[in-house]
Length: 380
Image 1 (cartoon, one colour):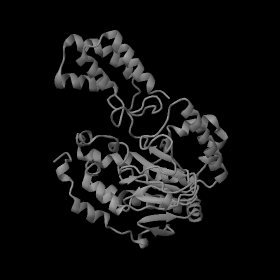
Image 2: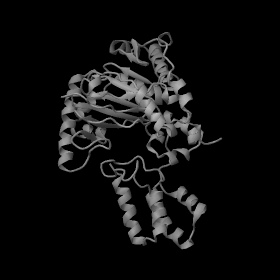
Image 3: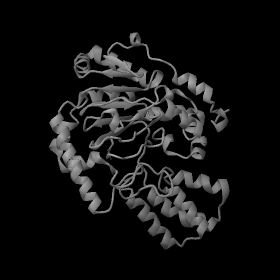
Image 4: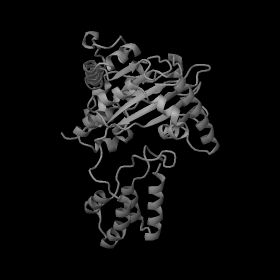
């Protein structure tokens, strides 16, 4: 079979996989292992990264963990400049206030006032406080762990997530790319794409405060990233129930970094504390390789194609093939402040808009307006 289906999701196989235990003797640089999560000390990490041979060996060890072992690591003191962390926190708190006043921002996973989200915190911090940004991201461990999984030329993106006391946990999930799709969409990708997707991004989080277990640090299911049909399984009730029975959490201190394979089953936890404003800078770091060779003006092409397809009265698979060659079929990357997902996990793509316009008999003037708005909403 070339595609995963729900029939491929077998709970017994999954249980056996997540029962694997890390053997400390396999890991040269870790200081300890807690609940199958290797912990790397700031001192040991800094020492290893200062020597070329040890640097390569450490990065290879991290990549092996992400791919073949438990799938997750903690790097203590990943951002060593805690003054920069505190100054960044102050900037983010002001951004949250500003965006609340502007009635934008917010979070997908909790009521406003319980959770807050800053989309594209990377750019916002850099433009508001470039000196703080420079010190905050002057982190050899963050750069090394990114390169360990993605190679050089990776691209950083970050989103602030604040879960206040009483903030509720997320439902277990995997992450971008296939983790942002419905079950039907994920099933439409061939099996090899399910194996490729986790290699295109790395998930991370920098703690902006101390995070004891009661504050709800990320719930993790070690080894789950190795389960082939996991993008289908993560949406099935029996797998979600098992996640809730078997997840682990690791307390973090301010400046610590948590990094994991995006296919790892995970979810933000309940903040059961009385006074901890749990703030994390979530990192979704991208491979440079998921890009086309040429830069194409697909908006201009889509605009030109609309009257041609209308006049040709093209339908079915032929029309879909023509649209796929011209229009942007993927709704990412986008500006989540101005182009939030409505009614699903993603906003309407160019290709979806073009097909809808043809189906609805939209006028050329109305289509031009809709296409311009679709394009403008995605701009930073």
